[in-house]
Image (cartoon, rainbow, N blue to C red; front, side, top):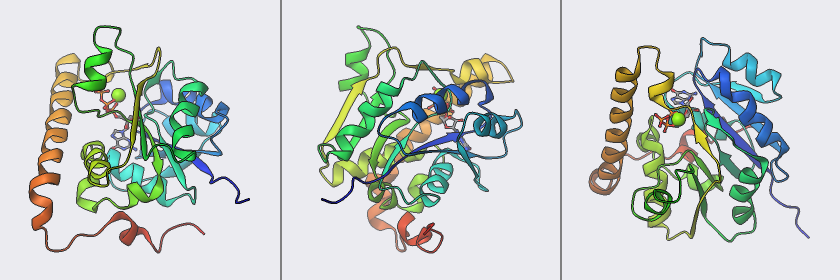
Length: 237
Ligand SMILES: Nc1nc2c(ncn2[C@@H]2O[C@H](COP(=O)(O)OP(=O)(O)OP(=O)(O)O)[C@@H](O)[C@H]2O)c(=O)[nH]1
Ligand SMILES: [Mg+2]
C-alpha cells in the first residue's frame, strides 16, 4: 500500500506576533499535519521569533505579498497536500485543521475552505451567497502550482484559487469553523481604524479585480508562467 501523502501547514505572516503562536500550536496538534511552515516578510514585531519559539519552520519571502509568501512556502516543502492558514486567527483548533485536510487527503475534495464563524444569520450567506475568500484552505500542491505567477500576487491569490478550482471542476468542501475568528485589519492597523478599513476595502477590490482578471484577461495573455514552471528548480528535494 502506498504511504499517505505528507501534509504541510503553510502560514503567511506579516506582523502577527500576538497570534501566530496559537495558530502554530493548533496546526502542530492536528493529527493530519506533518510540518508547520511560517513564511515571514521581514516582520518588525518579532513574528519570526514567536513562530520559531512555537515550533514552526520559518522561511523568509523576499517579495512582499500574501500570495508570494504562500508560493515561498509551497516551494519550501515537498508535501503533497498543503493547508494554508492565516497567522491572525483567533480560536483555531486542531479539529478545524484536521477537518480542512482530511477530505483532500482522502481524495473527496479538490479544495476545502474553512470560513469564519459569523453567527447563525450570516454564516449561510458567507457560505452560499458570497465569494469564499478565506485564507483557511487545503488542496493538493498541484492546484496551487497550476496558477499563473501573475494571479498569485498579494490578495489576488484566493480568488485565483477559487477560479482555477472551478475551471477544473474540482469538488469543493466549504464549511464554517465553529468559533473561528481573526484580528481584523481595523484592529491591527497601526495608523488607526480608518486606515485599517481603507486597507480592507483595497483588499476586497483586489479580490474583485482578481476574479475579473482571471476570467477576462487571462485568455489573452501571451506568456503565462505557472508557479510550477517558475519554481521547478527551487523545489526542495
Ligand atoms: N508573509 C506575508 N504574509 C502576509 C502578507 N500580507 C498578508 N499576510 C498574511 O496573510 C494573512 C491574511 O492577511 P490579512 O491581512 O489578515 O487578510 P484578511 O484576513 O483576509 O483581511 P482582514 O479581514 O482585514 O484581516 C495574515 O496571516 C497576514 O499576516 C505579506 O505581504 N507577507
Ligand atoms: Mg485577517
